[in-house]
Amino acid sequence: MKVIRYETNFNKNLYYNLTELKAKRLPKRFESQIINIYPEITSQKIIGFGAAVTEAAGYAFSKLSQEKKGALINDYFSKDGLNYSLARLSIGSCDFSIKSYSYASKRNLSDFSIEKDKQYIIPMLKKSIEKNPNLTCLASPWSPPWFMKNTFILTLGGKLRSKYRQAWADYFVKFINAYKNEGFDIKYLTIQNEPNAIQKWESCLYDSKHEADFAINYLYPALKENNLDTKILIWDHNKERVIRRAIEEFSVEGSREAISGMAFHYYSGDHFENLRMFRNLYPDKLLIHTECCTGYSAFKQCDEIPNAELYAHEIIGDLNSGANGFIDWNIMLDHEGGPNHKKNFCNSPVMLSEDSSDYIKNLSFTYIGHFSKFIQVGAEKIEYSKYTDKLELCAFKNPDNSIVIVIMNKFDWNIDYNLWIDDKLIHDTVESHSIITLNIQC
Image (cartoon, rainbow, N blue to C red; front, top):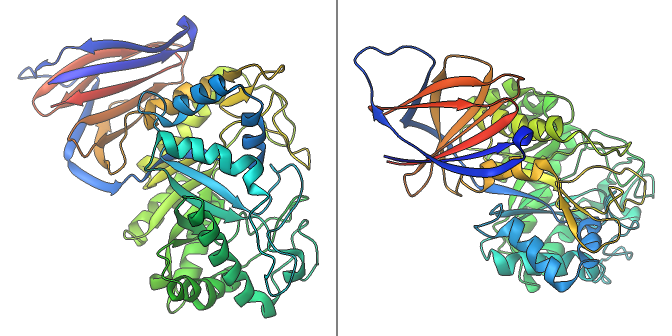
């Protein structure tokens, strides 16, 4: 058994400090400070990790030199970097766009065009997929075009007008095909970003009845008629309503066939119990975290340690509760946390330097890497038990049968543990405010 240990310890300014741990046979009697790992007990599979390639991200990326662009893409999408395999896209503009826009202004969609995306979004995506050809895209709309809404504006909520349900479904199809022509496969769709929120930026409201109706009777048939196997996800909003929304929509006739799963955000708190209930009730459905950021609405440079630990806490909790994947919000922003046409600035794991000559990796970048670098696409979650709730951890078995265990200590003191896997024992210490990843080759 070979055990490679990777540590990020902010207090010592260590990032990916690599060591090798020695495993020994378990003594006949040993009960102290045990973490049990059960590779034979598996559950959901992982589809990957990633972030959103917004227009704001593409704009910040465009400011870099060719050398720095290459370095950034390598940092995110190479196997030596964060090994990202997922990218979230906005269908039309979102708050992290330079200005509001739609792909069509005519009611028959005859002028549909993604030309606007070719300025900043698609160039960054193309560099990303060159580095990782297996990059998978998930796309979400923030608003239908103005003429499809009862308010006749993209912002401040509103609802999809019934007479445009088919046109809106056709709009999705045109988007998928337009991106396919650029070399990108849109594998997942959410029906609406945050359908329960009236935002000052692009937004649109759906209750469960109308979202299920659109998915089952319009979007799903439109995808099938055009030979598209893109999977539909519902909700795409905060975790506190995951179960209520799921029960309401999956109880509708035809929903189990049309809807492949649920997307969620983290902004209303942990609610990991809701994810566990979803996983138990709908074991065959996808559950994907699609947005998470810090410092939003009133941008400030967050304290490095709490910010990074928030990310790791969220990822560990989501994965342990049944999530299949994790997508961060903006993959990159400028030094002010934008651009954002409604000044809803926020933090990002990577930010452009003030003079645009370089980019800065925040500690959250490294913490996310403790998961994304080592947990492979297709990995299965495995079960564990631990002697203390002071350590947060998750464990996975990769397709190559390696075991990945991520452990975080958010406290001001060091914590010892003894890892028991198969018939081997590994003694180790997680230092204060640090995160470690164990990569075990059995």
